[in-house]
Every structure is written in structure tokens, then in C-alpha cells.
Image (cartoon, rainbow, N blue to C red; front, side, top):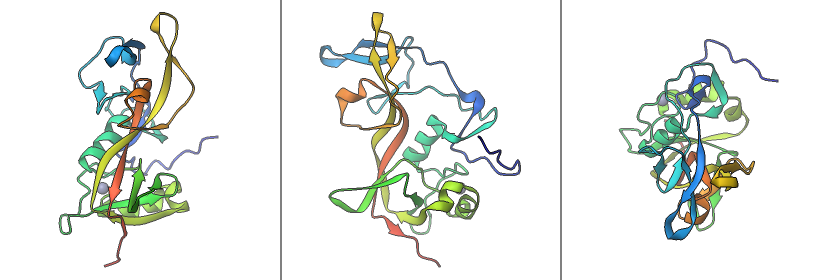
Length: 209
Ligand SMILES: [Zn+2]
């Protein structure tokens, strides 16, 4: 069952819309060092970013919001440019230079050897949008902490996995949202990235001023 969201709710910048789906004709071309590599039938500039094939989506924001799905291009932009996931504007606090970030149990993970950071697939949220995000997002109401971070760098992707079939057509393996390091060239050759994951540094609970 899907629960209809109230119509007055602002649709966050990062949320996917129904009519932003684009065709994904995929096959396995020749990869570096003699292997195979997932590719679009007709390649376009911008298909491969940070060494991984990225899912093609439109950014028209047309059609019904898909409340449980993120638009890949806007999620990517939020992560790389540190934009707010709700309003799409710069998230960094101009006074402190720190980035406000709502961390949830589901989208944040600690990593060994980094006691003050971790990995997340959820983009930052600017101070102005944090009250709205906490009030309206069911996920954030369950478990979330408002934090700030000093900086963030892309380190991995979430991806759907494919395997070569007859005449090198790409067959989905059925694995979705598989986390793959940007250093793992071999596995990335079989992956269609849907979200960018960043490592955040100097993560601190936000202080109430
Ligand atoms: Zn905002």
C-alpha cells in the first residue's frame, strides 16, 4: 500500500518524479585490459563519471513524486556540490564553513579507522530546511541526529548489477543498491550507479545556539 503525501508538502529537490525515467539500452563493450564493461548502446558524454556508468535520468521534475526514490543526477549534484537535499541550494553554513547534515541509522555507517567520520548516501540539508525535513520525513522522525561535518568526499556508489548475456546484452542480476568502492574497478565494470556515497569528516552533533 502506498500512502499519499499531503499535497501542500514541498517535494524535496532530491526526490525522483514519475516522468524522469529515461531508456537504458545496455550491453557489455570492451573494457580496459581486455575485460568487458557495461555501457550504453549509444554512448553519450557524461555516462561515465568517476569511473562508473551512471543511470540515465531526466531532471524535469515532471510527474508524480516518487517519495521513496531519489533522482540520480540531483542526488549526485547534492553530494558533489554540497547542495541541500530539500531546496537544492548551497548547504554549507557561510558563517562557520561547516556543512549541516541529518544523519540517520539507515543512511549512515561508521567505518573502521575513522572515529569522527563515516559513510552516507543521504545528502546534506541546509539549516533553513532542517526543521521542515525533520517534521515531514517519516524516516527522519524514526532515527536521526542533526550534525555538522567539516568536509565530504565521494568514495563509493550504490549500484544495480548486470551480467553479460547472449550477444553481450546486459542482463540484470537482480541485485540493487550494492555498495561499491570507487577504487574497485573490476566490480564497477558490471555496475550501473544510482547514488553517490560520500565519506564525511569531523562529524559532530549540532550545537543549539
Ligand atoms: Zn535547503
